[in-house]
Image (tube, rainbow, N blue to C red; front, side, top):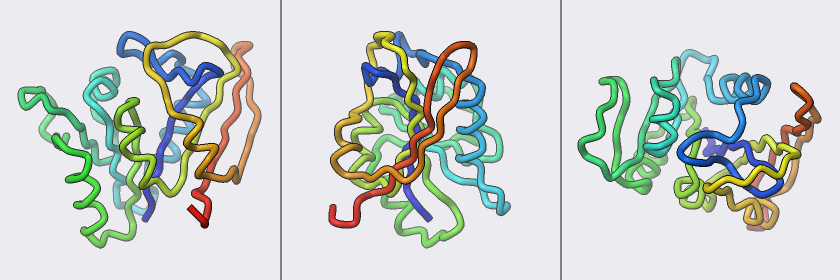
Length: 172
């Protein structure tokens, strides 16, 4: 059981613009699916903000989809859970005693900021590009409180990127 953050950022720490991801890289999307899907028969929880969910346009299969929003009128499929407070989701997850499910924080920016103090691991796709977005990830916090445990270089359609995995430093 762990609390994980998964995000794709670029050199400007941008993650999106106008409610959309800046990049749709197949290898990154495949990694997202592999990491967030639990293969032991018990679906992981994928927590996301309203805009992230709306961009998906449908629930993530084989995962428990939880959308964090203050919009009580948000229309979602019946299998999607809607919550209004991050603390409520976190407390339910921590108190449930379920040891075979991970909590994955899937965006956006505000949710990442709320979740970073509780995260055990951070999975970043770091894209070597300077495209400017209007939504950002606080990468400097990761560098302060987490240590790198894995790095893997990739390229797709001329775009260079790395998968970088971090684990919380023991002393923090």
